[in-house]
Length: 489
Image (cartoon, rainbow, N blue to C red):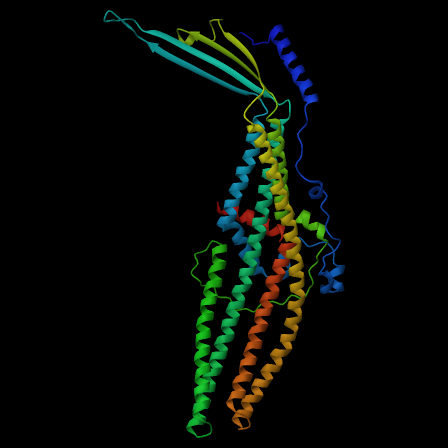
């Protein structure tokens, strides 16, 4: 059996080349980073500027919970969220992108190791001499080749690190997509409830107006009021019928949005006979610096910046010499069974050193392009961080003002309802005109619908604030979705 070994002369040549490259490495500049010190040492404020508006109770709370969906105590919502995690098409697409990025790490790391290939060939050749067909000549060949690029400058290692950073960015993107899906599903769930609750209120008001019209018509026939009251009441009734029709369309639209999130056919049919919950507990805000760790979109932007910086390192090292070693074993025989048994193996060893001397400034421009991409990625990262702080500050401020508006309209709702009952009683007694009834009725209705709308806004803003803070919705629901999804496959 023939064993392939490097002879002393070849070993000496390789040793000389490696020594030469090592010396060049010491004299050459190392790969530089294009990230500015300001991005590496980004500091967040010690507290949110709007945090004081939530009161002492909120300031005393510590780290943001990782189970924020449990604060709603809504088992039906939990079931819908699990269904969305299992069936949503966009999340499934993001899962495939994550796996694609994971395989990219393997591919990038493979270049750091030697590659080995083997092959065989065979041909039959027949010739003619003076028009006579000669006997066939058979020839078979076998070859075994190996090649390896020595990563003297760490270029291939940086390529693998870059792929790892891209995978980390993809993972953060997946987490962000999942968090957004849960937030959007929760928002759509409560928007659907709010629209259905408003529709029920509009239908109740419609029935009330129909009763009012009957009473006014009977009073008109008895000569107790004028035709103007009949016209005004009929006009209010028709306006309310139009409002009901519009709200029915709003319900279909909100139901369809939720159905799309859970990958159901958007037929617009999903009836829930329930009211919006009211959650009084304050949200633990934590400290602003936690956003840099907790928010997946900030992490994704940071990993993209690191990937761009490693791309700059790779572009810089492309200007250095490239050392590759290639070796091969080949054999030829007239019969296939004689391959590798004839003792006539041909061996070759090639040490290749390629140094880019002049390429018209192409490599320099490629490196400068990579540097500019680092600058772009850094600005994108800083903008993402700034937007994260802004989203939290706006949500905190909005939460405080929504609470104050909601408490005021609860009182206004009670006063308007009492005023409407009193005005109608006075109208029947002849103590006031129908215009007063209509105005008090409008105010009572507006107060009722505004209270429902503000409850919905409080829930929507609470979800937005949780998402802006980067809190996890609940690992137990994610595990439940994984288990149920695996059972369906």
